[in-house]
Image (tube, rainbow, N blue to C red; front, top):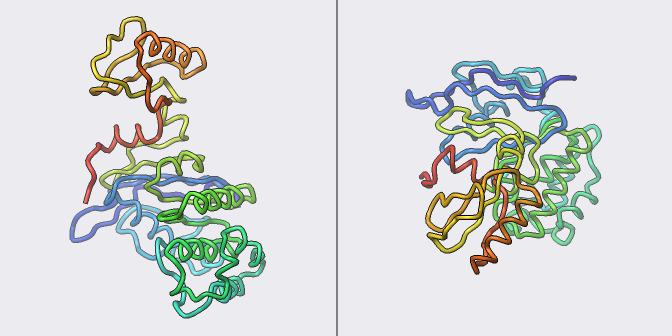
Length: 294
């Protein structure tokens, strides 16, 4: 198959008369990682569940690998990692993974997958006795062991320690290299920045921004840093204090701008904190607001 692995046009889903997904349109390219981002209640999970075939759309068109999401022929072609659960509580780690692998024509090597996700030491431990992080990693292994063409990952590193997070990232990157398409939902914006080829940001059931990380961040336009509030910005071209103690210097974020900012801070006798270019988190907050939703 060529073309997008997911095509969504004008997707609408209502609950109790309220549109939680309100006309979303997007595409996911083959052999790429698409990060679907947004605040709680933005419509991400519902959109993904429709693509997975677990819910039906009220309006709009959705095609997954060229098929209707409800087509049973899609089952062997996609992998789904739920945020929690998905395994039989009494089965041991290796037993559960080999059971899932047995359903696939050409599964990944189970022993290798256990090792890559640091599950070898608990291969004989039942799912119910695994820690939350171990259960999370087993759910990821179950989603990918069948060599799917498309994988849906819901918060794949939630609650994991830094070492496990990096192992998960490396596995996702290896999947992409092998030609697997990945749809990722995450609240960890550094994770999206690390993994995503394309980003779709949704809010109130609508797409508010879409593009590559570089496109959304303006190609790392300008530098940002924290310092004491109220500094005299004379001599630092393009600098503004966007909030007390938070400074932005517009222009290309290149070595010359870095040198200019560092020299200016030295003249002021201040140490800039968090000196960096514009990030995906900045874009997220600008477009969705800074208030946490419940």
